[in-house]
Length: 68
Image 1 (cartoon, rainbow, N blue to C red):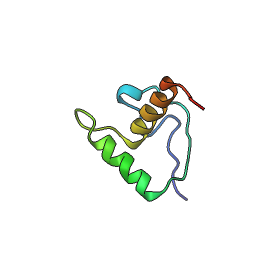
Image 2: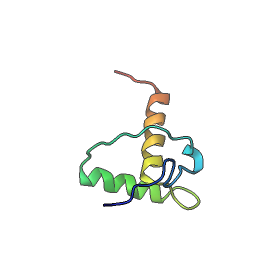
Image 3: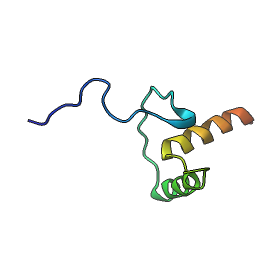
């Protein structure tokens, strides 16, 4: 039987978005994921994770306001 991780075990969120508490799973096309990964890698100084890039882009879109 596989061992389970202790409660609270695992990687903790870090950086600008270190206060992450909720999980969301989505399916996206491979080409969109590649674009997001490339954009995240260009962030300073050591790049961002894919999740950090997604959060940044989503927050930015809401900050601009929904024009629909």
